[in-house]
Length: 349
Image 1 (cartoon, rainbow, N blue to C red):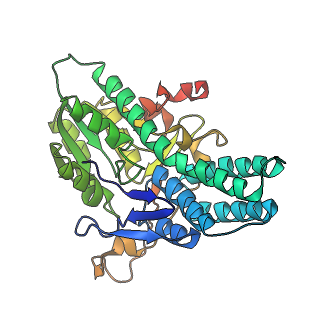
Image 2: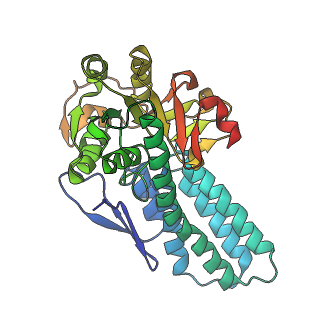
Image 3: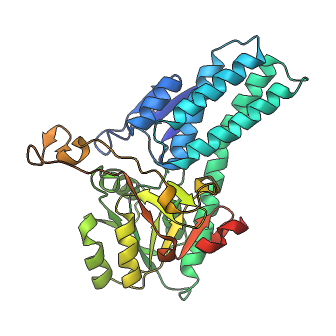
């Protein structure tokens, strides 16, 4: 059974607290926008698609409890709170795009004279709820397109070895996953020999979360340190690298978890195809290239401590960017729910 990071039913929202994994599986309740912002900012929920869905659902939960007599008040509250949610982790573009889509929608409802305040509220909440099912369907489509792309260059009876970085599975999305969704599809087709997941320092999403999902679903897998990827590619027959994305620029440059760029450089040197798996909502056509992507910097403590235990020398300064940008020329293809595209072909979407 696939893990669920988001559980939503009848206006009740719970998320799997990813700060406690893999040692403890605990769901926490999200009662409104403040809870949603905090969960995103502290990375109790992470992964660009999941950030957008939890943020928007936190607003839906809050709206469910309120009674409105004015459409103008609904519109103002929606706009303010969606923009606030975007500020929780600004590099992940999915929340920004979802906010803009929903703001446009609430403005349309406001201008429609046949729609009253309660209908406006219920229609808006329904639009948010639909995002949950759509994300799962999109991820499954990404899985099918990605598996087809990876298998297209090998005989039908061959199995593959894959490297993935960070966490892009059910814990990073509404369900199934993007890059890890491709791995799931390959496994379902009995075409996976082995998956290698990186630890993903300093936050260890690979060691804590991806490894947790792979073990849970009994997919043959091995955890490696981030510094082992070059040696791994040299010593093992790796067919492909598959990663996710927090933001893709119009030219195909891709921001993803720190460490992705160096894996792409290594893959290029070893002639290993490098795929990015991302929903359409991760592509930001308003940004021409990766140099315009604002990179979030995280607290020093994520590097200097493991839990409450200090592992770095006192007094050392730290640089802790959460993401890096992989140039388009290192990317073999970008896999979306609408198909597989070379980076220069994104404008065709």
